[in-house]
Image (cartoon, rainbow, N blue to C red; front, side, top):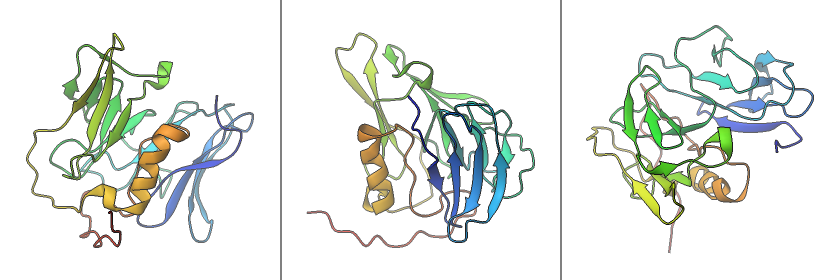
Length: 214
């Protein structure tokens, strides 16, 4: 069941928010988190149950949006059409570059094409949403682990990347925004977690975490 209100699915370092409208209003918008200035607005289409926005290609340093109820992939800042889709299900940091990959059930793919992981014997959850059991930076490499249930419901599997990266980022679980969003994967509307700072091609070095875990 979709949440009966407008809600923000993600944030960028630049302070933009992408909100999807549920129930009768439908559509989505992208607006400035500080001033509420609207960059992109699409209305109609009924219940817009889910969607994501993210940097999914190192060739495009702008974010692409996509929703399950309203077609089209657009630049979040201009509304212009873009080539690479961010999909409408889950996302994961997996390979060596800073762009995010698409996660759909037991499969991880590149937005530009190509499969990076096919977890044979595992399944996603929640029907067409095909959500994983969990995605999170569990091992502290900044890339994310993928937790899936076996199709027999007898065990959980944890998958991690073997790709070597030159990018160094503090453990994402030391970022309060990311840590909170991982928690709501299990307690709220299941959408991929996002950090409180920009991760993507051309990114600046992230801030040193101001969090202490005992």
